[in-house]
Length: 139
Image (cartoon, rainbow, N blue to C red; front, side, top):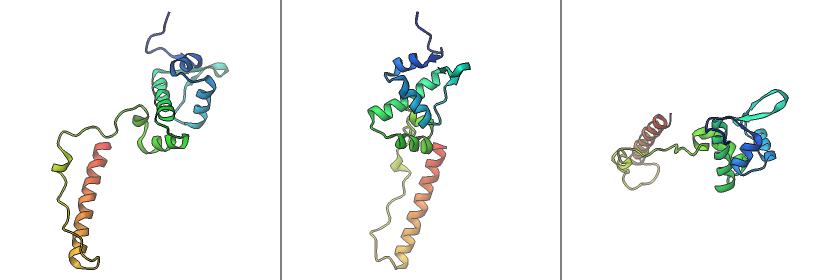
């Protein structure tokens, strides 16, 4: 009899489902603070469905995409669990990005001229606007 998709998994069941050894799961627990299976008396681990999804993401990043442990830690710190779960942190937009981008400033002149400084300030304002839009989208 197999368990339902919402059932908790023991470490051996999680290990079999992920294709990694049990000691690897325990090691990942020590390296990634976001892996926290429920523990019963005696320290027996039970993995919830969301724990399994996170472990699958960690396995994919480490084994398939070639990330290091520090790389996965950095990804989690910078992008959160969505990236680990395989969700696209940059979903496709309805309007093309180019429609919102201001035209490039004219060809650069020597750095000290007032025209160049004005063009640089305009470019900086455009970049700050684009950053604010990205922050709102990712927010």
